[in-house]
Image (cartoon, rainbow, N blue to C red; front, side, top):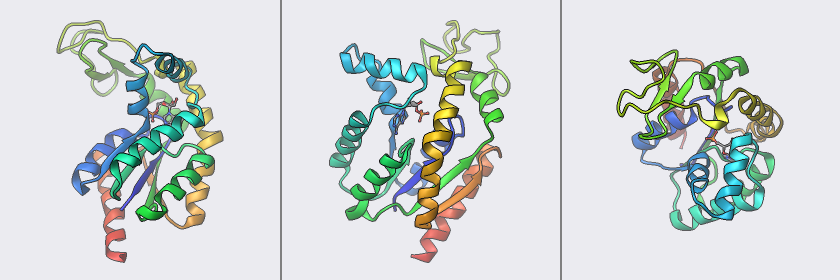
Length: 217
Ligand code: AMP
């Protein structure tokens, strides 16, 4: 079973990916996490990626193709949960052909969240640059304004969660990733889930869809 999680930035893909992977024993391929890790490296590639992430644009295809090939070369088995990939039609086609011998994409799950909700969700996130703790000014505020509960450092906003970058990422999603939804719809394996529901409710719905899949096979 290979799953794809699709949705705009801030739709909860990462949160759901971790839980589903644990429940169904899947390996997560999170391009956002891999790229954020690479962006920390003081190398020409690291600096290039860091700048692209800051602007909220997509990382060029040749870099993404290599990241995917590296991952699949190590995995060589089905049971992968794709979080953040594919993000455009070209990647959808590359992924489909790579997975031909690994069982294909079993289900593409679209977490639907309206743009105004994304802006609010991401705009209120704050992180601790020292220990990595994540806060939300609306739903999980720190005890003291702008100060990390765990280590006392001053909280910051992620560069790609500042208003201009969020708008850019949303525009990229609409232009590049919406066609990917059509692609999976035509293949007959797209399901849409209301990503504005609670984390738990979204998780239960995803589980239901995966169970249906297992019954069918
Ligand atoms: P995410 O955490 O999935 O929202 O990804 C964060 C950022 O990483 C995105 O805004 C893009 O700049 C970059 N990125 C993630 N996945 C991809 C991908 N499949 N192709 C190109 N760029 C990506």
